[in-house]
Image (tube, rainbow, N blue to C red; front, side, top):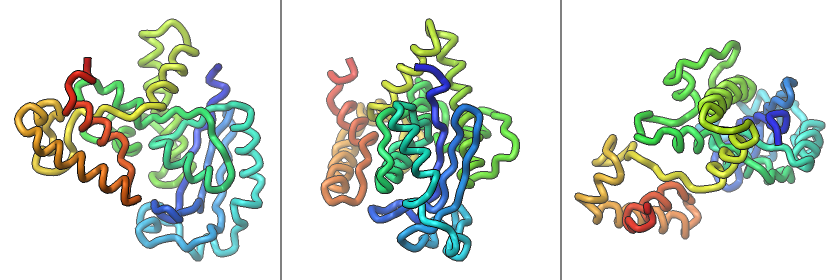
Length: 247
């Protein structure tokens, strides 16, 4: 396993719901960048347009991803046991799966960033926030453009890779550790919403376990109703409500 096995990828989509599909894909593999717009099988939602600035008019004359050369390339890359590197990678992997592109190995820089932030000092972990919080120099990388985000993603990955390599025996060991981190739910350190915004979850658990119980039940109900499967908060709340799991 080597860094030459990494496929840096980002998608822009018609939305974030169960029926959402790809409308732009960009990836970089072994120094070569690829990017294309695609006509999705469902309309692009207004909320998605406001983020990515891709409209239905812009993709009206584009080919669908289903018949594209890029789909064939990605199917071949991931069938060869290469590793998807993405930010909030579960979302991108699901969008690819909806197009019959199966990904087996994933490195999620969103999870890596949170795992390495042991004291929960970073206020937010979205890609562009980390780009400026960590003062990463990235040229020609407009936000919320798939190719621009891939360039930021690669720079962010390299930042954390080098940080982990300084405490590891080999590059392969770092990649294995990143894969392991990415395969598990995140233990969230601080609230970034609600009445305890900015406070450590562990401290809130000591003074108001009832709030954590209430929030956990809300998250579980949302999952059961198919509204949202927030595995990271479910795992975090369950862990802090059962302190033995932290040992």
